[in-house]
Length: 385
Image 1 (spheres, rainbow, N blue to C red):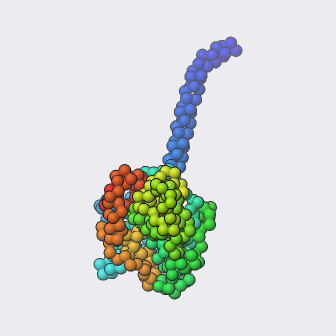
Image 2 (image 1 turned 180 degrees about the vertical axis):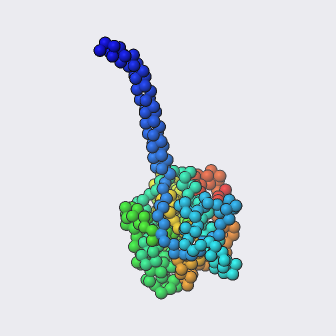
Image 3 (image 1 turned 90 degrees about the vertical axis):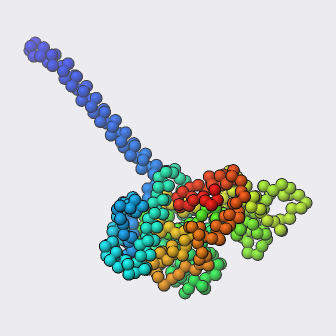
């Protein structure tokens, strides 16, 4: 018995060392696994997840992809899908009739444009993982049940004409020519998304085409100023809320606004006063949707848009969307046929007129406010900056 106890005592130190060794190994493994889980969770939380559910394709059009071309590489392809998966008709079948079908060529070219725009948005979202997504603006989204479209209506980007088109698609009007401005914006019959929880449910639907149209951020500010702010406060048809905003701007930024010479009946907000208002940090949270940052209204880092249109290229973009939906008989109503290097000529002239003499300081302050709109939607500051 004594001998057995002696042998046990000899082995005990070895067993203790072995036990400590295995405990140390287990502790290292546990720490490594925990760290990996934390990093994975932090990474997935930091980068906004794009909705991966995709609708059954409603268009046969797919651009041919040359893997040697960096501009149309696999990185351009949405949601990890290759183009033959995104569009059910094979690329080879599409290419076989490409040379003889102008519509076919047009759709393939425009599909590549869309892929590039969406890649630009995804890249910007990854660079800015903490972009604020204001779901309180869910009412900017319209549900078009008949045509299966989820449309984010950004003010001052051509929304009135798109609403005319959608009223025809939904069967509310026989043609776009019969749709007045009032009908398009007030009596359109569209169902708005009433709250953010319903919006989140809709974004998971795989049967709707998600569409948004944007515009050069500074051109949009000019349009808002000319259409909503710069005119006489009491002009016929002016929304009272814009009259109130105009009065607020003048009283806050104009010297002697409350003096004897101040006449609110003939009020005109100057461009300089408008810029002071836009760059005033105390006013940012109260911006009206007509000049609020586009990314805050249409959630580009949360909504995986199928089609991203631009007002500057509305003719080709509208043709693409309507053909994409197999609605070739419809045409977008536009009186802006002339374009110049990606910026509509009228907008380019207005940009030069309003921004040409602006101080560098004010230009930079204004750009900093709308910087994410420039980056997300691929706009350049030239010829302004």
